[in-house]
Amino acid sequence: MDRVKLATLWLGGCSGCHMSFLDLDEWLVELAARADVVFSPVVDIKQYPEQVDVALIEGAVCNEEHLEIVRRVRARTRIVVSFGDCAVTGNVTAMRNVLGKAEPVLQRAYLEAADEHPQIPAEPGIVPPLLDRVVPVHAVIPVDHYLPGCPPPADRIRALLEALLDGREPGLTGEQIKFG
Image 1: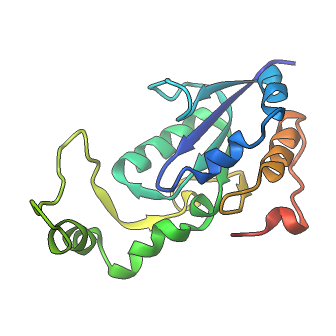
Image 2: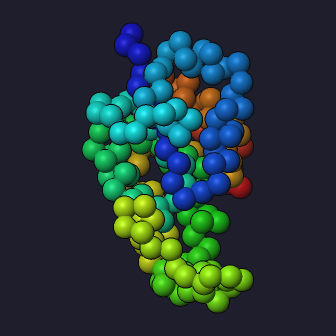
């Protein structure tokens, strides 16, 4: 069997899902025997490659850079997984939506609450513009599987990955589909 090309991405979130991924501990050695990590925040790869088999996307879509990368991921990936509650629902990351569009959020955070040198960060090419609303991944691209949890525990991640590596549909039920 060909080695699976696995990618992980981190959008708007806390990196807790990736920390939980690392909690796979010894099973990571088994995973490494069957899959190549071709893109991830834990490896130094700058461009998202072509022909990826599975991508785990952590975090909500919060800015224009996120829009661009999730669209590229969908175009280049066979199976896309919303990885954790922020990717699945927007979760904590989307709490800013109640304040309205992006501009009032930026004004509150960088002007009204500033102790020194109040200014809204804006550097084209470095600071991506915020979207007016934070959205879950499936609001932008089609998603094949959802892996809830904040963060999803390592055994849940393993169950999903084992099924995908074996060419089976993940059958997450009961505690395995719990949010939070």
